[in-house]
Length: 121
Image (tube, rainbow, N blue to C red):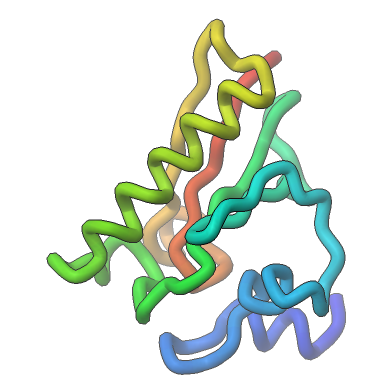
């Protein structure tokens, strides 16, 4: 892993994250969904047949769910709506999970709020 990517993964709230660089097209990804507010792409280390990350384009300092405030309600709602759209697009009508890792002890490695859509075998 390059030093630039490693630094972006651990960025503080005011810094550019790995996900900001993905949104900007500076780091390639397998994009599966995009709207005016969110961006979704396949996880590079999937835990299931379908494993997609859904991120906000403007995260407004929301580095983890632990930092959520009233001002982040719109971001969280749009993320959940995007997860639903991604699940429909991916044919996960039999069911899927939405996971939000919060903090290092929960496995969060990129401090830019993101939701995992996990489904399939």
